[in-house]
Image (cartoon, rainbow, N blue to C red; front, side, top):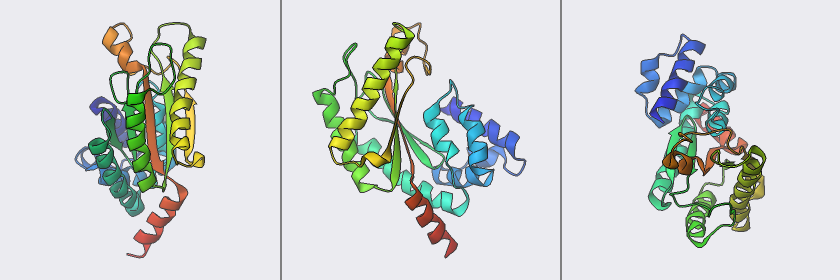
Length: 231
């Protein structure tokens, strides 16, 4: 993730001379939300989304929807709290705060995993998703992107279908357990977005993953604008 954030910082610098790399690198997560937005909002977010390493669309979705300024800092503070809760309560979750959102990754060795060539939610994964659903209920003012990914074993078409089934299985489980379907966007990419080396067993196991991006919905954005404009 450090490598990815360094790339993001580089794009920010190129996009706006008003924002220094040092300012972004030294900012905490809440401050990064404000700096990102003041550098150009969604337009810069689109550029960053295409430069977050290996076409990482989850990070692109987070960065591309920034509000920035004081409102971005307000949203960042809310996301700091939610990210900390996920880290504390959800076993196996790899949690990364980026801009005004949260990126959560579950790979084959973590709390949400699938048997080879399967996409049913097993008992251990149910425990993890139950805890995640509980947190989502506590923070109803967010939208959730669920992505499915695979390694490069097998054909492109097979892996695309498998990633689709796994991503939809996670979304369906969460909606069946009380999370509004309107909050979800579900996508799948097969083997096209590896984060690790597919020539090693460890790399392939990490590429077989489900990623979740958590971002502010319109209600939270409006609340942030209202609260910060009044101060």
